[in-house]
Length: 270
Ligand code: PEP
Image (cartoon, rainbow, N blue to C red; front, side, top):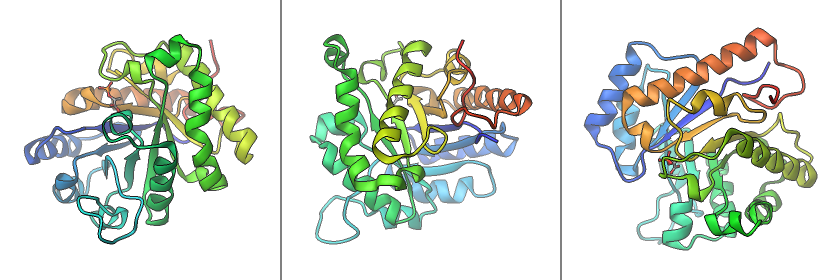
């Protein structure tokens, strides 16, 4: 049977202990049947560990060092993130690639280290508007994936890939479900070609202006194994509503007995 969709909130440089508690209070009243996690700023990891214990919510960070430990001022070791009970860490978000000049190689090194320290890396890939307009989406995705595939090989089965077209992030204008399906298929084909891992083996999630209004339509697409949610994850009720969409998707999959040839969280294309 396919895994239920994964919904991950990315709080970016927002949030507070009060928001952690508000989300935990909501989760204690019951949570839909999907995998759900929030990736918070590092100083909130301890609060998340306390507040989310006993709820179905998991938590993670938004970046980590590619080193285990050492004289790297300001960097955060993945082992320390794991120490606070975190399961996930986002690496290679476009905001870090842009603002901090992170390269594809550094992103792959971070993912490798995170995995070695027991975290599930959520590796963000996606094209900028000018790359989309110049018909460079496939080339961009391949370039971003190559060091990752070389470094991790079949260990990519333990990684989440987040397809996040940069132009869709924070834009209130998500990519269309058709475009998302095409990009996910391209990523899955690339992984299959270079690592031999099938689409069922690697979870690929979509991120970019996901809301409760578009979550159902996106999750219904072939190869979409979940969602990475920025802005909408900052309002607990909206995050809950996105997770409800994921649970509906999981329910549909279960009813169809979707253990066959589809990717995690996917349904046949329209
Ligand atoms: C993100 O930055 O990872 C993201 C998906 O943001 P938003 O949902 O706000 O577009």
